[in-house]
Image (cartoon, rainbow, N blue to C red; front, side, top):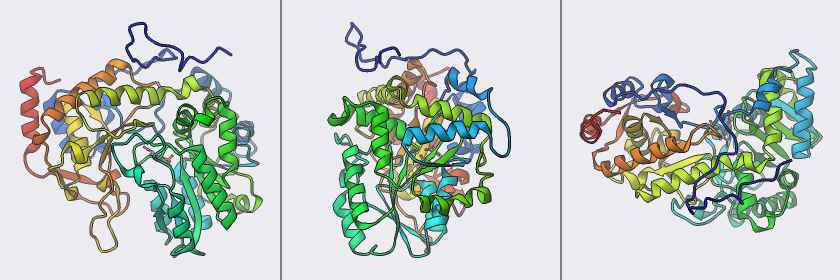
Length: 487
Ligand code: F0G
């Protein structure tokens, strides 16, 4: 095994540059459209970056989900898949890997992360019950509320401060947990959920120390603890590099300890394992049996759970590769490169820089756009117009309206520029920073958005919006003045 390089390699010049520990051997042709074309495309997509066709996107920074670059070992493994409905050898290989990785007894496959959430919620959430969590995720919350449950967040206060130097903003506040569990939530808690790499607050990690404390409390109070390990790779990198007690520990050992603190673990295999799929790992027989029979009902037979066997083979290898620090460092160090380049240009981003992607703070970027006009959605549209880059709104648009129809204003208004693993080069990252720097200088031109078509659930996926006023024309005009090529 070659030695790891992530902390030891430096540039003689002193420049801080993220260094790739891989090389590209297959590439995809990209196109950058003219700004006039981008404005038309944006309008046809209802100003929703989810609705942009990829052919019109230069850099797809919507998500890392299912779009991380896979390794040659993953592709090779896909050729060896055992295609059978029941008893596939591929399943047994994956089951063994998951069992060794988490130290758990049972593995239940599912077609992706939200499918695990559906099973978990169906098994444990009842009307009037609560799920207590460091922070919600969109699909998680949708499944819980669909079944009559509610979500209570116990994120520590610092977690919601966009500018911070706290290395573990995803941590739970133990006092908030105890207050709720012994007060309003008493006897009504379906489970407590810790989300690794806390997505919606900017890919912020949870410390191992905090996991220990929450677990200790839950065991004492007989509360079920669920771990969303979708973003475990980033979280693991940060625990290893930011939590002093973990610096000398093997990654495998850290994962085993985290998992031992939990009762049920689930993950999106589109993130963890860099493939497409998902699964649940559990040791307790009772929890396993409660969820097991739901897999054939919603997903597929127990030995594939809705996944293609090829993806299962890729996931099997990808999960093992999560234990290589030079592999899991790639997203965080590129997020850092992007974030620092943006900060240099004065662009407000969530700090500390986290995993998953760089999160631009729309509240500080365009404070003149009220939350009711979806500043993060408007900024995501402006970023596409300016750079051909597809980011994702993570703010009020991603919330669901309250039962009375009023807006549920999000605590943060972020545009996430995801950095899928090993996909983009440093020049592309610099291009993004350059264009966002330009946009920041012209931020006064950006206006809000209003709904044209609003779906009732998970509206951010398919909703269509229009700009409130002709601000996109003005932005296009300004862009052409500085970049006459329109590119
Ligand atoms: N949990 C977390 C923390 C996630 O980030 C996601 C997906 C899910 C669960 C659901 O998994 O997509 O496989 O059904 N996050 C994606 C994203 C969609 O873009 O951040 P899924």
